[in-house]
Length: 232
Image (cartoon, rainbow, N blue to C red; front, side, top):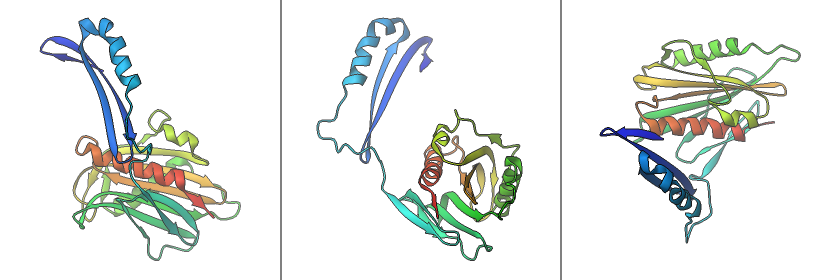
């Protein structure tokens, strides 16, 4: 990236590597008018960086397994999150609530995965109908969208291209109140078809502006659940 600093342009190039629970960054910051002569040295620094005693592990956090019943499904979530099956869902539906909590009682972010058995031969609802139904669910737990949610594109959500049965998703900002906390929030929705099952993903987190790290952790928890989901 580039920036203006006291009237002069600077170029910054950063590369990031993961090793176990550690993140390593290499950063080169060069005045723009010296970039052409310095860029080869910067590239060499990025390209040759290596850990002498690294673990070789690229996963930052242990994943745990959560199991839903009737319909049966299995999914993973980061170990720092807790997963609880939704009690007494309607017949033909099972769901899992996954929460990121601070100090035992402060909810930072929330993910729900719901698996619904579709009636034999019944057509699946449109994405817009699925979105509106999910927004009603979110409204029931205290989230009100500040405007229309935007469709997730492949640029917004590149990992979706590897998800079998991916139908589409939405994202947008709004406000929360009640048990999920109060303040600005981002909602993310995703829908997957697996044979005779419809899977709905709901995510509530702070906005990236208010808490970038928690917002990114919530998005990653959504991606992990979606990527690891198996429906029996």
